[in-house]
Length: 495
Image 1 (tube, helix red, strand yellow):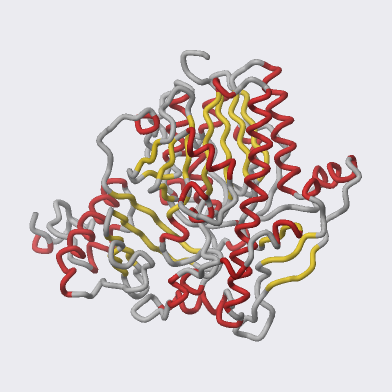
Image 2 (image 1 turned 90 degrees about the horizontal axis):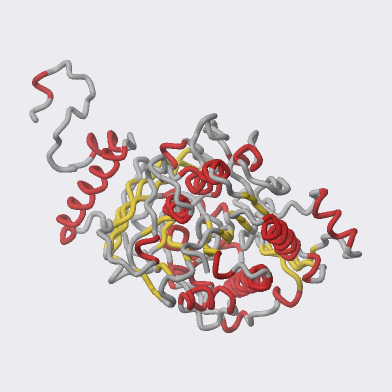
């Protein structure tokens, strides 16, 4: 073993609930590969996405910057006028790794820009654009043809009915291909080929495998579509959501995702298929990790597993993600295994996907000052007890339409500021399913004031101009600056 692991294998899924893994307490989960990674590494129990939307979260990973700073604020497919690519000259970690002698490659989902591809940031690999498995991509079609495998074909479509009477979004379907023909198997195969090339080259490497799943629609072969008995699925308690006292947009989003047009038995089946999809991915991760072992790379390779954000799968009568900052889509799995670090750790510090950026650079011995919203996780992974923030901030800017939100999550309470309507405050000790908005509860007035002041201060310190709205609309405590920015009326502000 070298004095420090040089190589990095970054495994990432899309729209992945934390409660689908055995390591996070799901007794019905069939995820032995990821469970073993957690057993031999460090599992983070409070790992959050900076924003529950694909492109902004992935751009935060690339840059180590919060979305408001890098300004990729929406997915290209639903963009309503935001930037679609990082500005030229933006710091990204793959370019820094390249400049320090690393081979860098990405297999799988990109979705971090429209005009610019992974190659523009120093990443080898076939560019696979889009938000879901691009089953018409020439490289995938060539893979099928060279192996005599059948093409993509689906049946048993699951969808509800939209408010306008039209068919809802496709939520799941049965895939008529053997597992070797699935896009997930194809991605794992291409990753193994990349590992083999990089191992033969001898230079340190960063290899990323980004699955497009288990993002909906859940399209999997029979053995995964029927793997979990729906009768064994316990429905999330937040199915009882009434949206009383909640921002009205949540009820509208529920109608958009057609929840109430489908029987609860269909919801159970959707959850069961989603878990089956996770198992399919877990098996493909097993193939990649086994190849890493057979190539003799384990003791010189740090391994990450995480995702861009979570998924509702019926929680709060919703699917997908959107303008609601619930734990279902903001708290995600996060596992890091570094050779030589303690095995089987469980950390409860509040950390972020964005922290991966500084951690990757730290592993490579590269300064991370440019990753201004990122902090290396290595002190935690190596068993230390560094001074760490007692909370985490997240943000949202819209999907389908602009919708600004900011969230502050601490150990017991969560505050969500929604300028359009109703703010939210949840007591996660008494209400872990976030069904009861306590923002107006008199007995929590002191908590509300404390969190508003804390969020305001954090946003102002990091330069997020959302704080201007808060200063004018809420009691955020004493101010040490002129919130009007004018400086023209001495009577308007007393320091």
